[in-house]
Length: 183
Image 1: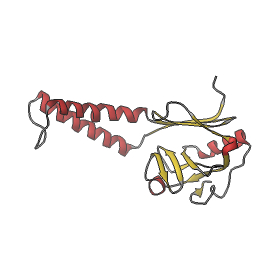
Image 2 (image 1 turned 135 degrees about the vertical axis):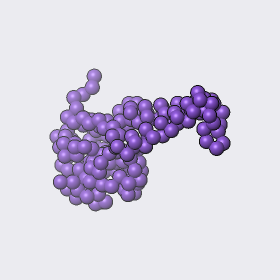
Image 3 (image 1 turned 60 degrees about the horizontal axis):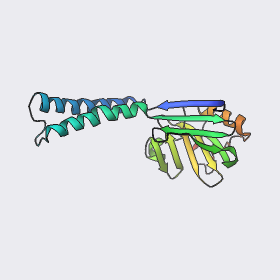
Image 4 (image 1 turned 90 degrees about the vertical axis):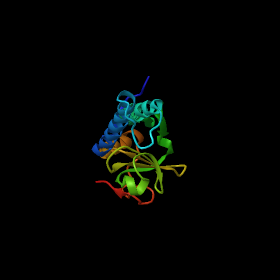
C-alpha cells in the first residue's frame, strides 16, 4: 500500500523546440524510407539497403518520439521521505529519507550552464533531475551529495517537504550558495 503523498508532481518534456526537432527527424526518416522502398528512388548520395532505411525510420520515426512521450520525472513527498523516479530509467521509485536530508531550498538555476541540459544530469552543483524550466528544489544530504529536482511548483514542493520532514528550508540557497534562492 502506498503512503499518502503530501505533494505529487509529474513532469514531461513539453518544450516546443524539442518536439519540432523530433517531428522533423521523424518526417525525414519516414520520407527517406518511403522514397527508397516504396518509390524505388535511392535516398541520399550513398544510399544504404532498403532494410536499413526501414530500420532508421522505425527507430527515429517511431521509437524516439514514443520514448520522449513516456519519459517523465515523478516526485512524491511522503511522511517518511522524498520518492522520485525518472521513468523509464527508474522503474521503481527511489527514496531519500528525511534522516538523510541536511538542508533543502527552492532555487532558480540554469539547466544549461549548471548541469549541461535536461534529464538526469551531473554538474559542479551535484546531480539534477529536470525536464523543463529553471526552478526546482535542491537537497543537501548527510553523505555530502547534492541533488536538484526541477519543479513547476518549487514553493509547494518545499512546503510539503517542511510539513513531512519537520526541517525548515535553508534560505541561503542550500549548502554552498551556487544557486539563487527562489522567492
